[in-house]
Image 1 (tube, rainbow, N blue to C red):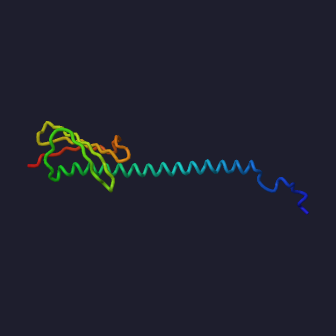
Image 2 (spheres, helix red, strand yellow; image 1 turned 180 degrees about the horizontal axis):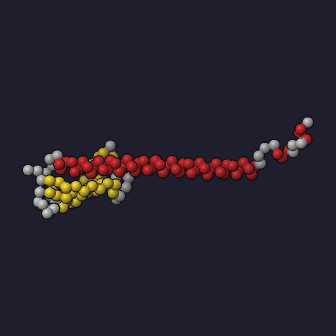
Image 3 (cartoon, rainbow, N blue to C red; image 1 turned 180 degrees about the vertical axis):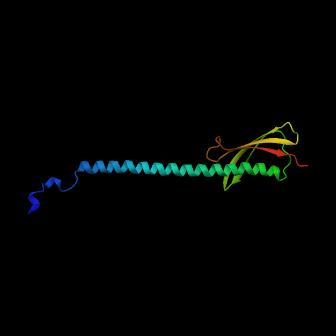
Length: 128
């Protein structure tokens, strides 16, 4: 009875309406994937920065724990922290007090070797 009141073209969505809805949905999904990817990268970089800081602090602690008093100069090496290989570079300078050395340590990560993830400056005292 009411079928005469509803024209045949108004029963559902047109192809254009469906394509526009799919386009909007695709853009929203792409933005969501990009945001989650950026969050994951940020978490990975934060983890690497923390591990690099531990590498630098371990270097300073090793001098305090009894390694020989460092000579003035520069040296480099690698340390493994949480299964990742980090490269460190130390610059050791004298101070006005001959019992102390200034130690600056820069640590780079495995993904970006030239990029410094952590930088620590400390003063080491000569053992008596």
